[in-house]
Image 1 (cartoon, rainbow, N blue to C red):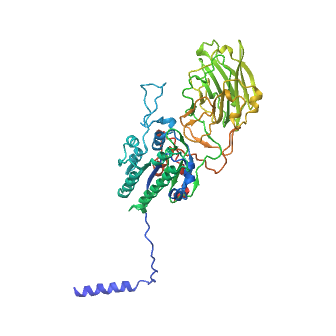
Image 2: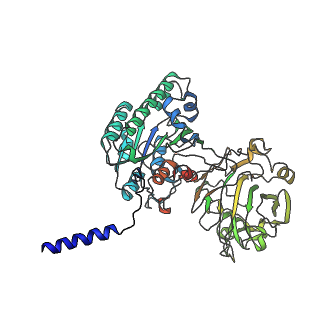
Image 3: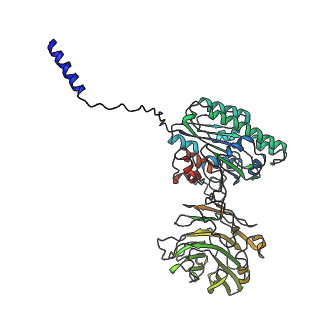
Length: 560
């Protein structure tokens, strides 16, 4: 056995000695790469009642420092009240949709609604976050009504002052490693403004702003002191439910911060318009109390500026009527053949023996440029009531006598958007609209022509007869606001989107300057959308969000 061991050893030496020798490579000292993806988290702080302009004037130290790495706005659209702002902030829906205004957080009753109908309800942001992410949530507010409204957070401490809210927020942030989203509410600024005014020159208001800013600094320090902060990626939103008071809210502000962000002021830029391009997109006056029903004798004028991108056969785009069929009642504008506009009126449901009467082939306007379309109706005598069509101030087609159509009042709402017309195709009109005006007088041609490009509607010679004026340039949420002394707002419904048209201004529009190739008008409803976006939660159509996750426009800054 000894001889065999010696032979094996000799063979081993022989094998190793026959290998070619290479020099040893230089040592390489590589740093270990941290492949941990930072966890995204959200902190929202609302300083209720803080007006954007006054925040700018005071420029408190902590918020001013945040702005250096933020997307920010000092003219966030005012909400309707304390509760309305908070419901929008947490549900992503506009006041026009959720209709919550009073401090009890109950929806306004619709006097004309079905008392047994379903009540719209919208889930809050915490509900979505905990559905899709395994994180803890918190709401810290000294307002009992808000705490009673938001009941599904993991932490909702009972506090009665802003100081206690700050301390509780600091404690939760410092001790809860699984915390994913926290909303903090301060109320003292709004209370201080009620004593001397919501202006920086009021010492009470200014001091409350500075104190709230101090609390903001305390909370931010708590975030940075978390043991896991190095592996976290926080979106910080400092905002308000509205500026000013609960009774008279004004525009607020929004600061959206992350260390990777470059500073950018969020403003509406150029012209913004809703794109009507499907069967569901519409703007209506839900209830006009008969204001826009013109009966059998009322003189009136309707004018709207429109930009068509396509030709769609028999597609209505503006109406105060039912669908155009055997029982047509009301008035309607629609695209007929080869993109021509047709206007019609009828009163079948009001006893008119004849069907609708048309003014056809008014003109082809499907050229993707703005045109001003006008309709006047004037009672001449006991047998003549004349409907006249204009395009860009020029009479088009042959005026029609609609006297024998009797009353053209309709139970249907005033509507921008599609209605059915005989022979409708499945190709929907694609158009933008602006500057819808309704007068309760019939304007003459010189007046129409002279005021197509009028930018201050109060200077119109017939302003006292204006019963509706919708510029349609809000760029946010779901309401066209009526700017006339009389009239009602219009509600946007269906699948709609605001599009940025840059310097493609309609005639008569007061032009917002082009400040950027990105147009962002901010609202309180954006807070929920930004929160879900940051938490990598897809905002689905069924969420009914009006708020915009506009950080998508800046992803090259923070997505590496």
